[in-house]
Length: 473
Ligand code: NAP
Image 1: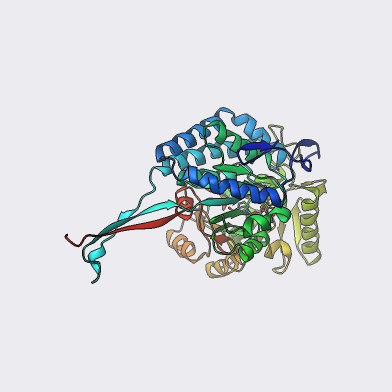
Image 2: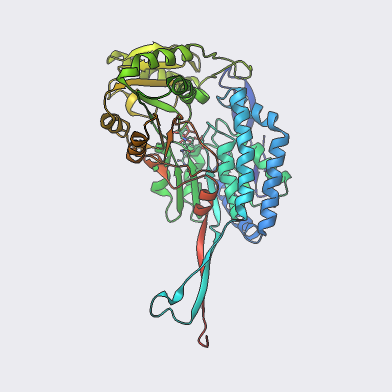
């Protein structure tokens, strides 16, 4: 596929191969952009902003609704692209494609609700004879950098609000999964988005990232990815707005009065969705000691029933990790934990990029698999005796995106919900629940700012005050 630069779909002599992580087959190639392309993309986006800022709200909404319709009409094609280039099974990929339609539809709807308010200038001495208001105006050029694990919907979470707000936008998708993002940009163009308002640059973050990020012309960077790249970006971005949707290590507390069957079922899915490569995936499960054994038995039973393998087969529950290297990395973390005393209850074996869904207990607190973001198909179980201890354990890691708890005790639920340090608490659901229009983001190392269309629109616009001095009033 080509990249969209300055209104043209272009190729480059240097290419990046996009391969299916399941069997390493070549799917397609994309151009390998360089720093000169990055500069050209920003220059084109600056011109694009001159166009986008003047687009009427109804035009932006119309294009967004139309883009949503295009994705919906080719849902299976988008799903196949997601499933082939990434880790998701075809059933998981269909869900992502459907969510992308929602994200774009909500962007169209929210574009009509970007509002300001009147300012009561008379509220302090010196404000007399002034009348005015503020509007929210687009920030300008937005640089959107996206990760591999939700290659379509996470791009939509940036492109949709950027267009809704009247910004121009440059998409830099993950190098291993660029095709879904390119197809989404194609849909925007087909829907009639004026050229230059959107660019898509394919290239290695390590090669073009600094040129894009340090360029003073973009007014906002909207980044979703790992904490390491996030830190690098914040160090060199200079004076611009920054949205950071980073990783996590999500805790779940299962109390003795919980519906254990539901908790086990939904937490297994939450742990192994997209082969665990999910920023809100379940990583640590703190289970009340009174129900620890029955919960563990059921959790392991359901996990053992998972069919792993070919992503394109309807019956497959879990596909490979994004690369063999990543699967080896996590296999090594499991081994390290086992050496230090952890027990593997099921899983742990690897073939190529396929790591079995793996459940562990007795994991030492200093093992990587406990303390770091695993971003893969492993989950740890721990028995706990009291709620304060469970809360302290849940909060003991320097991430805080989502947390979850299962209980029927309302007092306990409120206590834990307010005590958990994170951006969202799911009660009687796993951490892996997200509605695309809810505020989404984290605290601590999980990031800065919020996405979720309406909330991304706040970040991608800024208030502008219009104040009249009316001496005769
Ligand atoms: P990553 O390695 O941080 O890459 C994310 C994106 O950043 C890619 O497009 C990457 O390009 C680019 N990049 C890397 N270095 C860069 C630099 N110096 N300047 C500019 N761009 C740079 O993350 P990933 O492995 O794709 O995704 C996994 C991570 O994303 C996990 O930590 C996960 O938790 C997080 N995540 C967070 C959320 C959320 O909403 N909070 C959602 C999904 C994923 P290349 O691909 O070319 O390296």
